[in-house]
Amino acid sequence: MPKRILQGVVTSDKNEQTITVLVERRFKHPLLQKTVRKSKKYRAHDAENKFKVGDSVRIEECAPISKTKRWTVVTEA
Image (cartoon, rainbow, N blue to C red; front, side):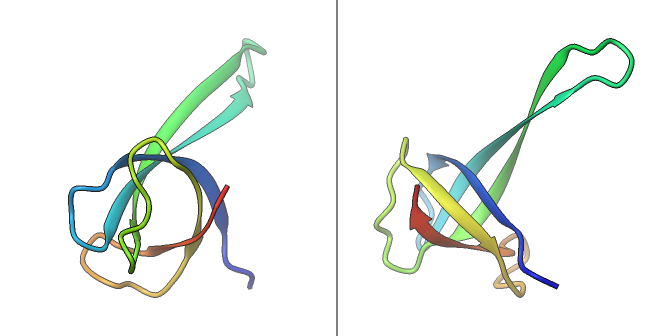
């Protein structure tokens, strides 16, 4: 099964080798037919600490790195 890749914006880079990425998804409500925006935060592994707040990045699913980290940064989007 292929690994999921998501695109989002870095909201925090305060932890060592970790960034918090806000991923927003849009979908049409099944009954009301209105476009709904939902967002979720993911913690991703950034080995070189090169991404800063506001950067747009792509993250990829991986094996658990710590209690909360299950994603790694692939590239800057």
